[in-house]
Length: 457
Image: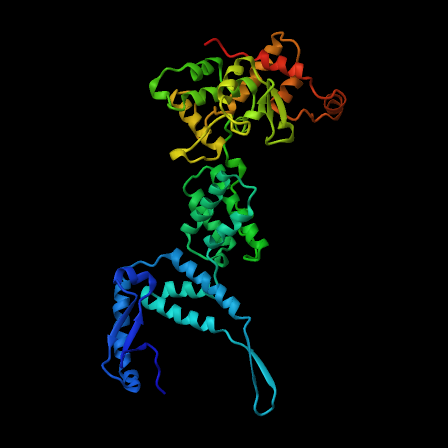
């Protein structure tokens, strides 16, 4: 029998045509290689074609040596083949047995056979390893780790943009360390990664545990969706005893003066100077958290009150009196804006809006470090001061004012102003102060906020 494989008719004569793989078409400058056989006989063309085919395939293989295979492109192609094979398995064919008259049904999986042909092409182009990886992925024997990152992220709508970046980075970092499919990640592999990537390099335990937690969360989802049997990252975190304590403290009055009045040109982050100074004042004179301040909208800053609608705790949902020193700041930041506009305009590089608190936190810390404020003890990852230390300063100052005779509020008022839970470990005290006494009056909160004064500038 004659076959038209690798043959095509051109006019009245036959010629050989061999397809150039898409990954090599740019390098070779054509989509297929063609050689005329100078015969009108199909039988003759079929007989003499194989030497020509072999020569053309050798030419393609030679070109492939200078073109590296793109793992991501190969993976995406293999995953498309997997879908085709899965869909093809549902095709049922039947025939009638001539001897018995019985109708026999069978599954015809053409796609799986074609995947073998494609794997053979890849072996010619890029070697056995690339072909084997392609075939295992296409037939469901192996699942690339990064191929399921996007589906996982799509389900995690509760994550903040910064968390998305951290989780994706942790998974991609592990994938870069060991190019292995999900099925190949055992407890031993996970433990080896932790030992080599973190322990051996002396990575801070908190940093290592953050990545391990991200990987564990991803694998929990893989198990839930049937892509993995067990979570190999459980129990892999480094001991918390290895994490040195990094105590934080409030700013001193001298440090507050420096933050608010420094004229060192090298410390300035213009054009963000005014933005940072306004943020520092709001944080220091309200006790609000960074994330609470940065999401304030114009409509949340009316009638002499900051209305906090989003906080890390239930107690954080509250109203905070606007300090007299902040009235001008709020009016200026609200001018010309709609009610739904953010009070603070925070943008990242090239005008791209980033997670608001994360961006401004970096800007503030850069400014603080340029001023030489704060220290980092040996063996610690973080220093003793940050943006949150402005909140600590507010609490310290309100407490000190109370101790010095300030009237109209008490320690419980300070707790409610900053959004701390006023429940106490002692059940009787909790009942007395948290339930029977009820919430603090707004007058008391106003007195608390007014008692906090910036040091003389």
